[in-house]
Image (cartoon, rainbow, N blue to C red; front, side, top):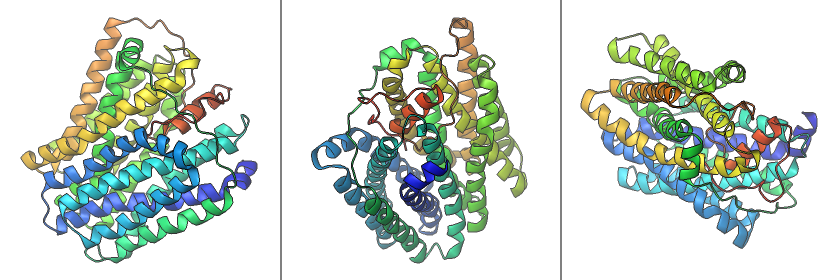
Length: 423
């Protein structure tokens, strides 16, 4: 671990600062949008546009990297992020915000792809798993800490938009000054949807559903909090609780999933999520209980993401893992685009409770589908890949490398830098 920190401290520090900026912007827009009298559905479109931009970036950034190189792409996209974070406060209009969210989603996609390429290239087979695990922890810590920064100023002013812009600008300094050589970049072609669906219908449908859950959790939580009349402090605590739950639940669920049928784990965790999130729909509960519900929601959705990836990999050859990862992340991204929009529509119909209702319905749908799939195919595959904790904000580069490291292998040279990202 010390070797990893010594070799990659600048990149890890820079990524933490980037995640502070990214973690602030989504929450801040939800709060400020309510203050600007934007409608719930309008804000849902704003939030959805980030995931649309991210999906565009995952397809277009690899060509940019090959044409002009890592350093130029990294610096250019970083400048775009910093500028957009300030422009939010200059143009508080939902149409302008939607366009800016597409730009910033595109830019963060490119930044993640580039940073993870560097980190992966700088690691050996022996240290790659540690390096990427630390990287994912750094991402989570940055997002959680970002919620605390929301309490440093007035969401109705400029300071809270300037802080993430400054953090992002500073983040690129240690990275660009310390990285001496750009890695070779080769794009991994996603496997066809037909191939993935034939290998695991549950994996494909589950990843699409989870995309909607993730984007609703992290895109609409602040909108829900503002509509429910929570203070900035309470909103930041609630959102931080979602991420904390995601960290704490990963390893217990992962440990169990390597020992019993993964479909049973998908069914059980989805059912827990559905039941927990129906509680605030049916009853008025105190804020501390809402935070617990949020932690459970994040605590089951994050492991489900890793669980479905491991389940699909149980049914394919290891040589196909890179393409499968890219394809599944693309499916997840498609689901993420629709999540905030549908959540906003439901909240417009039933009020703030619609935030929890939408996610509860998706969890229930995943549980029912998992139960159905258990009746259609007997468990014929042994676990050929270990459960590996994976953040939904990682790209296919990190995903492929960390899975291969968990299985005791290093990525092949021609596929270590796959090019499909996930927000």
